Length: 190
Image (cartoon, rainbow, N blue to C red):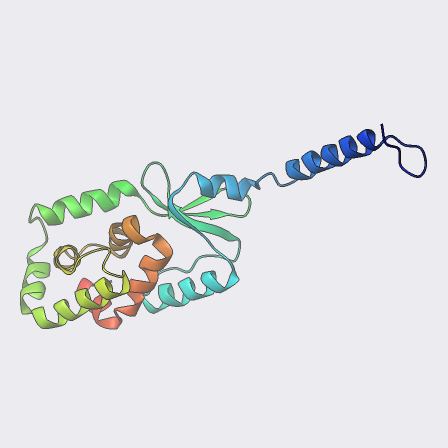
C-alpha cells in the first residue's frame, strides 16, 4: 500500500475524500420553497429580474403584484394559480374552481347579455390582432384559432393565464398577455 509523506495510507485519504464528497452532496438538499415549487405544474422559479418583469406586466393589466418573497409561480395539484413563497407556503392567485366554472359558463353561452353585446360591437379585426400577438408570443405553441376562441369567451385574467400557461408556463403567459396591450384589458373587461 502506498503511503503519503507522513505515513498515512493513501487508501484512507481517498476514502475520506469520498466521504467529504458525499457529505458535500448532502449539503445541496433543496430548500422548502424549491420542494414546494417542484410540486407545481408548469412552475417558473422567480429571480429578482423575472419577478420585476412579471410585476410590471401585472400592474399594466391592473392585477395585484406578487411580493418580493415569491419564489415560484405555477399551478398546484388542484389547478389553482399560486405563488410559492420563500417559506414554502402558497398564496392563491385564482382558484381552479372559479376559472373552470367561468370557462364552462362561457363555453355554454352563459355570458351576460351586456358582455355579448359588447363582444359583438367589438371589432373582430382588433380581437384577431390581439390573438395574433399572443400566438406570436407563444412561438406558435398555441394556435391563433385556439387563442381567438378563448378570447371570445371573455374569461378572467387568471383563466387566460392558466389556458396559455398550461402550454408555455405562467411567467411567459403573463408576459404574452401584457404584450397584447391595454386593448385586451378593455375588451375583456378587466
